[in-house]
Image (cartoon, rainbow over all chains, first blue to last red; front, side):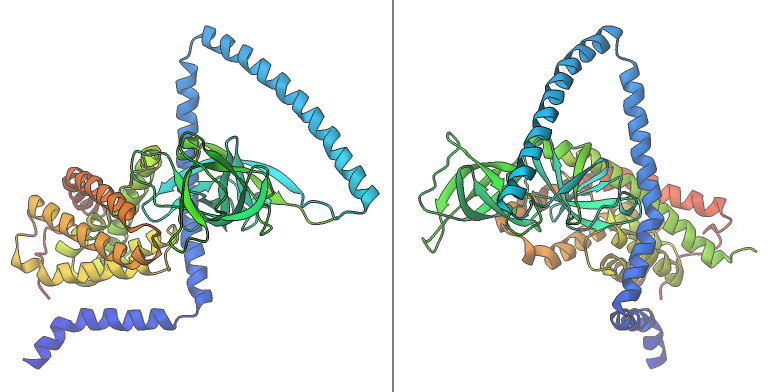
Length: 276
Length: 179
């Protein structure tokens, strides 16, 4: 009878021993195995994203020539506007460099823009992440800020050979220093749990008591530049609710993020450049 | 060089699991704008737990778990061990019901999925900033996951059976044995 009982519980004993062995295995080994499994799967995900792009291409091919002409006309206006902005930007950069040299100021951290397509969106109840189609091959580093036309997307949390993983600002794991427009006092921003069928949201903490915001009069939140990850002045979202915190010293509130975060197809990674 | 039937079964079931996981990933990509999420861990484990010999099933589930872990921000091995434990529990219980019946298998997959989701939620609940919205989100994800599982379950079991037959490692000659 005892031998039969042992035979019955043998798989569980094996599992227990396996768990024990797993705990003893060095972290380096586990990390290597994880990376190996990830890189093994990466081509499948990237291939799926290329197929998606191809689908988009063929669906666009079904559009009429009139649509194409109208889009070309609209794009012409936008291109002219951006060309002017680029010229203005170059002139301002020259002015900043001149002033830095004149006043012997330390220069701002410089970034290189690296546009990347989104391979996969992974928005569970616990995390909101994007996999993008550029990694170590494009010089992306862990912690690099990621932006899009509506402001901050998030930051790079993992870099692989040809892909990177970006934690969205709506993810509860992301916390960063922020500030309001024309108010340098830093506040703390954190992503939140995002309910189904809603726009992405976050929370703001340690807001001074003299700051007011509501749904009717929202206040825009920007990155403060503190912490050294995100450059100053990138838009995070609009604070639509502020209430005194439980200790009464500060206010906490809700931040409404750009709804386009839910359907991103391309982003820009700001890769920090080494100081000259 | 030819693989033994044991290894062939493990690889075929792991490959089917990987296909399902990738399909779920693609579905989640399209569901992301609505902030919905499908998780079918129970379906990945059910066939291996109900129909395969214990060792082959465990190997397949552990392998699928490692593949899932590699792409998830959880400690490496979390899904592998959860799937392994779930498979062993199913192997232990399978002689009590008609494991060959598709409806029974789907029901078992639904219950396993619920149990695994609750265990994962229990592990991660401490990190959640707001318990009420977390609960709502989890409930919605659970409802959609269970609905999709009930729809996909019969097809997925048939896929695994046929894949095993095509690989020359079918289950016809062996009955599910209790341990």
